Image (cartoon, rainbow, N blue to C red; front, side):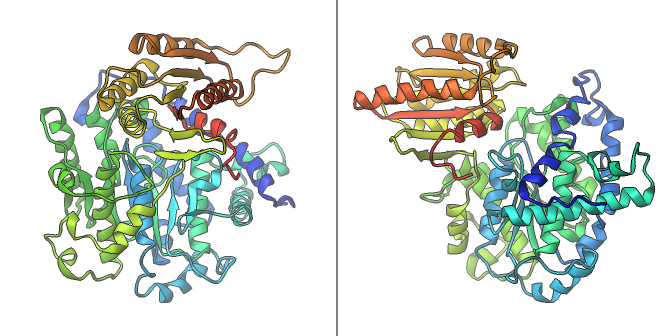
Length: 541
């Protein structure tokens, strides 16, 4: 029997019981650096090869197939990449939301009820224009599933969560999966791991809410990612953003191998979009992307050129800040334009012609680019005490360099600048050096960019009395790296976010007393961002 508990908190409790993404990633261990056959990721090939068949099986247990989703009329922009994929997803979604539902969307709505097993429409009459599925979240899991660029409500999340949970329980019971007791059919043992479950839930929500347009961000990789079951009929554009080293055990230990994996989202007869990377160092990456596009039978691989982007004036007042966002915006414009054309929109003037340029984008696109936002990505705000906060979950070398450039470009000489940093799973030396080098270069001065650096673990509270001491080896290593990179920066190490934030507040209070602005940059980990933001007054949930 299904549980009678149906609250949002009950849903979160059940979700927390599922196997975590970190557990899955750890199954891959370290990367095999000796195998570079055909630039394909070699590590744990068997685990990767099972990913999509297993996802299709879970999807079927929830009542869906790629063809049944296509039959609903759902049209998706699919986004992969190492850096910028979340931002591009948010930008594309924001642009799409500026336009009315595509022609024929109303006629397609009737198919949704049949596709979701007779569940009927969603819990309100007005159908959302666009759905967005991204990861990770910073404060609430609801950030991952958005309707018209707003996180799904607690009530809807709980309703649809238990619809999917019950379908999977019923399917396991019908299949007579081996369990120790009848009650276990309703437990986590008959459910997929965390990201797979949320992926199925996102599509279930889109179907139940009558969503006909969606932006889908890959979790890790592309070829074997849990989102990569979409049929070509469901996809209007495939986007590969900037590439770099990340999850090498799963994706490969060279950028070429990672490019092979990310470009697995390319679809036959659908245009692919990427940023053209020039120079000898990037030659192999572009060759892989072009070969994969040919192999997958894409309509065309559109390569957005840096020269054109650099000539473009960009968008003033955009919520997604940072000089690098201009390149994400260009990629988003190209993909959103293709999507809107494919679903029936007609553009007038030069923007409707094959030779369009970024200077031709209509007002709706500019508004979409300006309004797009994504929690924990180049986000800035002022708290009630006047402290300026800059938060970004960057956790790769290239991303940290971008954050350093962004932050240094926002502060002024004489300010008191504080870095709050952690990265528990990756080498902090590479990341911190990238951050400091880019920040100093952008500042253009010989003075310190950071007056203080606070290095902390991600746990929110310090250990309770009687609990064991926490390992601070990573934080102490980071402290040493900061001292070497910026000798005048005052450093401190903490075992939890709360004591770290107490130190930051002391620094900010002293800065105010001295008549100076205190700017705090929080970066290195989305887990860290979540803990920090919960201590700041502006947070609503």
